[in-house]
Amino acid sequence: MSMPSSPAHSRSGRAPLDSPIDTDGPRISLHSPEFAADPHRAYREMREQYGSLVPVELASGVPATLVIGYYTAVRILNDPNHFPADPRTWQKNVPTDCPVLPMMQWRPNALRSAGAEHARYRQTNIAGLDKVDQYSLHDIVAQIAIPLINSFCADGSADLVRQYAFPLAFAVLNAMLGCPAEIAQQAARGMAAIFEGVDAETGNKTLTDAMLQLTLLKRAEPGDDVATRMLLHLAGLSDTEMVHQLGTLYGAGIEPQQNLIVNTLLLILTDERFGDSVLGGSQSTRDALDEVLFNNPPMANFCFSFPRQPILIDDVWLPAHQPVVISIAACNNDPAIGADQYAGNRSHLAWGAGPHVCPASSIAYLVAQDAIDQLLDALPEIRLAISPADLTWRPGPFHRALTTLPVIFPKSPRLPEA
Image (tube, rainbow, N blue to C red; front, side, top):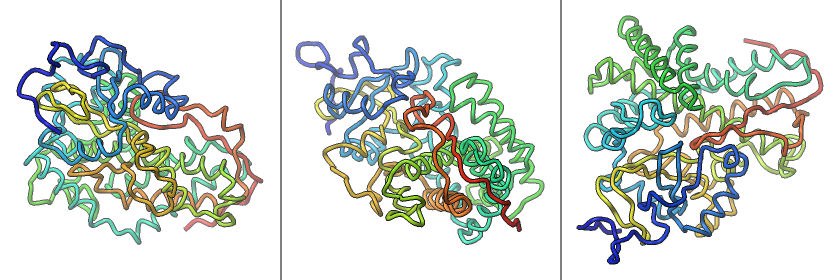
């Protein structure tokens, strides 16, 4: 890795062939339905044409460089000085109605800050999350999962996205944060709009308003929860700063958690290695989770950074202040690392790496495993209701998310609730 002292051009005065700095050249759309339908084929074609760094478009008129080389990604993720996460210079020229702006714009939180600001916000997040009792979390997941299963077990069919994974991830996060139902519903509406990129500007405001309500509530009525512990941290966050830390937790704790549960259930229901059920198969829920985090991670393209000046990486110039996005899915499947053993293998980048690595990975892993085990224990004969080829994936440059996961099973009696 080296830093240029002059503008990012070769001696001929032109950018190198296929360099992402050449913004007039063709860019691969990450926001099209075609990409969502078969991203792994797109990643293979990208690798053949471009190598480790690919010129892409995150939304109409929003250029970026997608990193699909594992070792290149690890270098970038561990080099916050050259690749800071602060997008403020970039977003000056981005229209306010840009559908990816709410996901990528600067906020006073750990995810979009650098240096001392990042350290201050991250310490606060860790203080809130580290005291989560993971033994109690087992019970919380069960208390939420069983009524959800009871709501459809007598029907013989269900959509596991709408009827199980989303409401479970949503309720577990609210329990950890100590968030009342009314505020939580408002937050969910806002976060859904941001992830979908549909009326994202309004969704951003909806989420912000909900997080302010929660902050003010916890200042007035503190409890034994993540939000209160963050408020009481020595960093002394303002209301505005707390709003954005809580918004980050909602962003990480609902949509990606839902997708991790659903994508893992899809693998279990369609791969013969798992047998008629995980309990009877040769592989476990943990094995399935590890494999999904490699091959079908819930956030496929994420971990944004914004170089302060042009920089040469892998013989390609990256322009200053243009997004560099890590393709977690493509990097995990880079032939250079040749990962063919997934069980217990945590070398994937699904949680990120470096100073911005996810501080809640153990919580997310536990919740997903318990949610899946509760469902499969209750409905061991569950199977996919349609051909896997007929499933549809939601378009969007960042997530890997099914629209529905329809299943069928023998009609079953309700489970006892606590």
